[in-house]
Length: 173
Image 1 (cartoon, rainbow, N blue to C red):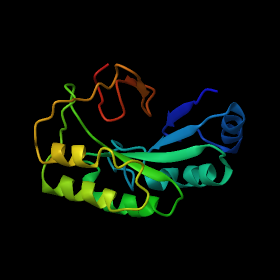
Image 2: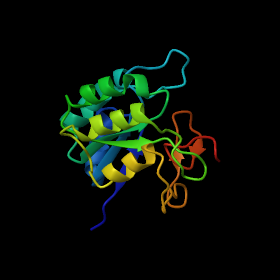
Image 3: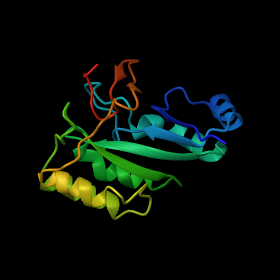
């Protein structure tokens, strides 16, 4: 038996698509949500407010597991706590990615990001605690022996149809 997973912005999800994914034997759907609210300048499209109805459909119709992934970056930090609170209303787990550069090094550091990271891990819907200390050490600016190999195993198609190396890193392809 094979397990299949799908990452999506959720924009094109509808009841028929969810039913076809159910029939396909999909194991996991990862829904990418960037912020609580859409940005006024259009930089952030994948907002919880925009995707709430899609998330409701997934939670009510899907037989596969679903979880949300959010990115912690300067643009998402101000509403990060509100986004986590909104996602707690749903029976899904949540993972957080730190925005990083072409070398796989975190682009965010410092106490505000560390506080947001800790707030995520104090919640009950955490996808995995494996990266808890690793992410905290990145946010404290501590050097790491490991770096992100995004793009070596998968590609990401963003909301504009552009191929990227990963969801947390844009403009490298």
